[in-house]
Picture 1 (cartoon, rainbow, N blue to C red):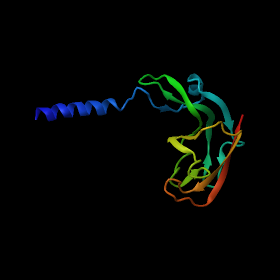
Picture 2 (cartoon, rainbow, N blue to C red):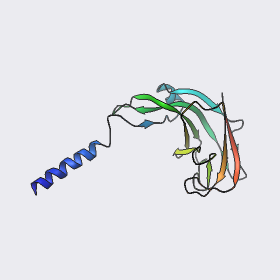
Picture 3 (spheres, helix red, strand yellow):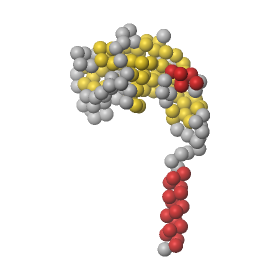
Picture 4 (tube, rainbow, N blue to C red):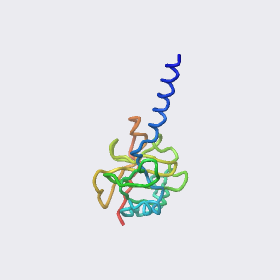
Amino acid sequence: MLKYIIFSYFACLILMSSCNTLRGHLGISENIAESKKNEVFICLYHTDGNPIKINDTLALSIKEIWLENMWGYSGRQLKSKKTSGYQLCITLHSNSLRGYNDKWVIGNDQFSRLGEYSDSSLLIEFRNLPDTILNYKVYEGSFEFDSIGKKLGQIVLKKK
């Protein structure tokens, strides 16, 4: 019985320590100011209109769009380090993403879609620097659930 208790203790200790690795985890800046502070900011993107009207019932009110180097936390410290790749971050005003990835989604296919990383933020990752003009379609449905419906509109993002 004592062996079982000792084994259980060490098993729990190992599991608990693996939750926060010494290597750290990937990060996403909350805004342009944080991206610049973390020294990962590359450039701004913009749209021709704001809010972007997709159709009669769907409009996106954008706060900020920026491109940054992918980065991660260095171990247990909140110190950033660059990793390979890039991420385009879009922050929106509240309620702009209502129904996202359930009733509608932005992307050209399941591999080039904008993922939701908070209630008011979208993100897409790139291996190489993206083009100066990015075109994304807006569809009914969801790529995750293989329920893509008709095309609702399009979003064009341009490098400033």
